[in-house]
Amino acid sequence: MNLDFAKMGGLVPAIIQDAETEKVLMLGFMNEEAYQKTMDSGRVTFFSRTKKRLWTKGEESGNFLNVVDMKVDCDNDTLLIRVHPMGPVCHQGTDTCWGEKNESSSVMFLKTLQDFICRRYEEMPEGSYTTSLFQSGVNKMAQKVGEEAVETVIEACNGSDERLIYEGADLLYHLIVLLTSKGYRIEDLARELQERHCPTWKKH
Image (tube, rainbow, N blue to C red):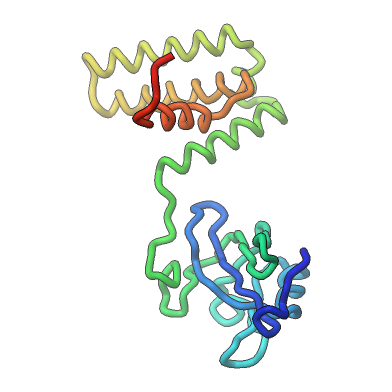
């Protein structure tokens, strides 16, 4: 990375974001030494403007920020650092410096599930149910989606709400498997629905 430390007198702002929940956790500043220590250690280190020294987040509390990846903006003067936080980030004990809970919405888990199923498709580990689905072929996978859809309908019409959710989850899982086998992801369905939500969308 070619960071421009000169623009702000030797410092660059570093935006810290949770890699899983995508919540912005805090904002700190780095000089070149703090940046290099972060790169070398894999834990976020800032330059404290009040203490005039380097400080690794979590050095006292144990709530370290483990680096997942780092990106620099288009002007080369701001960092975006995605992390796995080891605990609350704010010195006041809250998850973020804005007092927010660092929690992902349940919908966000669909991306995590999609990534997991993609790894199964790439690695094909033995003994995995997902692997067995991929190995059964498209026709079998499509048939399984149909079976789960029927079971979902049955529960909606004559079953319980609990079983409806259960079967609906099965349907969604098997649909993601089928999509993955065809080179698509759940985000492709979300994109299609997003386009349909546009007032100018017309049915094909």
